[in-house]
Length: 195
Image (tube, helix red, strand yellow):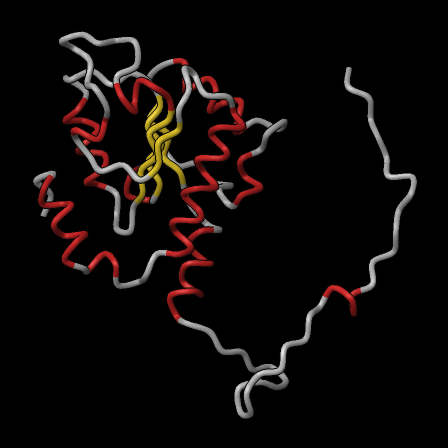
């Protein structure tokens, strides 16, 4: 049993010290008025409401279960709802060994997800084939679909999966709203044969 610790030396928070006042230019500040970029607001909303779709095939899936459990609790990062329908999710988390026969299925699941969509390759098998350097195992899912973040490990600890999830959140929060319409993104999808 883990000992329960309470904060016996609690300090009272002073809200006035926590709120930094920044003088805005004339006409851009005041009561109930706030200016920012549209892409920043959209990025903030997207990064804190990711809906992951776990595609788990091996031992990395067990580590993901531990990540979702109460001790690590991935839902505190804004991914409360783990979905199993690709049409309702925007983050594909591929965990475990992917055989070459499973490659087209993984690609179909990716294509069924609505834009914008992101992909995490969790573990050595999803990232590079791992220890299975054989004719039947896909040597990295980036041969079939584009990957945004790789999480190393065999299997990775829940802390590593959370770190990979936080890297995705950073990427999502800083992504421009117009990136998906850019020539570079379209060229990336065309290199995978995706229209």
